[in-house]
Image (cartoon, rainbow, N blue to C red; front, side):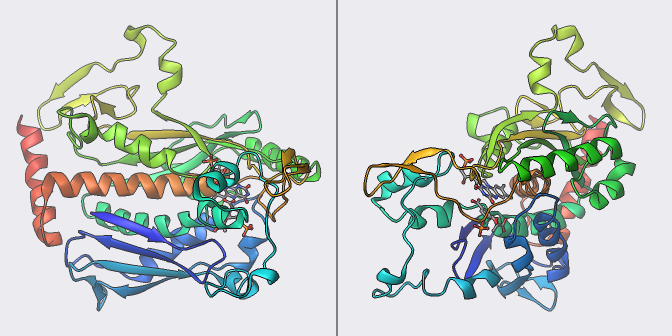
Amino acid sequence: MRFLTAGESHGPQLTGIVEGLPSQLPLTVEDINPWLKKRQGGYGRGRRMVIETDTVEFMSGVRAGRTTGAPVTLVIKNSDYRNWVEIMDPAPGNEPRKKALTAARPGHADLAGGVKYGHKDLRDVLERASARETAMRVAIGAIAHKLLSFFGVESASFVDGMAGVWSQVPFDWSLKERIEASPVRMTDPQAEAEVIRRIDEAKAAGDTLGGIIEARFKGLVMGLGSQMHWERKLDGRIAQMVMSIPAIKGVEIGPGFSNAMKPGSQVHDPIYWEEGRGYYRQSNRSGGTEAGMTTGEELVVRAALKPIATLMKPLPTVDVVTHQPADAARERSDVTAAPAASVILEALVGIVLAQAYLEKFGGDTLDELVERVERYKQRVLAY
Ligand SMILES: Cc1cc2nc3c(=O)[nH]c(=O)nc-3n(C[C@H](O)[C@H](O)[C@H](O)COP(=O)(O)O)c2cc1C
Ligand SMILES: C=C(O[C@@H]1CC(C(=O)O)=C[C@@H](OP(=O)(O)O)[C@H]1O)C(=O)O
């Protein structure tokens, strides 16, 4: 399964093409739109999210609520486009009416992208660097999750810490509903209240916040990915996908960074076997992968999100036309995107996992795939 996305943040629409889905996968917009809604939410988002109500349309590959096996084309319209029609006009002639953005914003694609692609209006850079693109990838992730649901895979995601405040309530699958209802997608009501206070404080100060986010997956079979060659290692593929989310600056599988400070005896997970249950672990300090393959335990993916780069109290920069010192351009902006990023993390790791299932089990139809996954589960038990 491969995919492409296209579309500018303030252009008419985002487009996605997904190729390699099995046929007969039940699929409606209702499988996708709730994910888009969740991605738009979260305390600390800016005014753009009031303008947009993201919903997806199928343009190919789905008939009567099922995939046909043909490439699936998805579209999400940008409601904000109506306010940007002239600025985003592809036809020549509107340039004088365009508001050129020339004060490169530190922390954004503006400077390197402007130099690399030869743009002096940095809008031509930022329109594609914007995290708006993740709306389409989350839509594609929702399809991946739909597929995973047929293999018995379940997922969750949350914000573990923000602004120096850590959740004190450890994740438990029974907390999923609370997380979904939380304005900052936290497990801990006390931490949540404090984090909301700090977001308000940051906003009032013209500042921004990042956070630590986590996604979990249970029900995965042992042996997705491969140790045999570097680019087939599942943890490597997950890291690439996660780092491609705008503003993510660190990724770990399980407690990867804190494990690095401990002796091996406190890090690795002893192996047990029981009749009827097969192989299992009593701990999951590996976070669910060993040597680029799933262990069959929960997969735990954590990521660090930097604070939003556009500051209402802007940092010093240089105007790329005049080369004079300037204040960084101020665009309408989020104060934090950590809750949204946790949803993106969960959706996008789902894509990597769906790809791993499709690679391992093949299958042109959903039935074939499910049958092969079930047969493999029996093999794992009997091993
Ligand atoms: C959901 C989401 C929303 C974002 N919203 C903003 C925003 O409103 N303003 C901003 O400056 N950066 C925002 N970002 C981050 C920038 O897109 C990102 O920092 C920038 O493109 C530079 O890329 P890098 O941080 O990966 O280096 C957001 C990121 C995510 C994941
Ligand atoms: C549009 C989205 O996020 C945007 C991501 C973003 C950025 O610089 O990454 C900047 C902001 O865009 P705007 O200037 O239009 O307000 C965010 O709103 C979205 O998540 O759908």
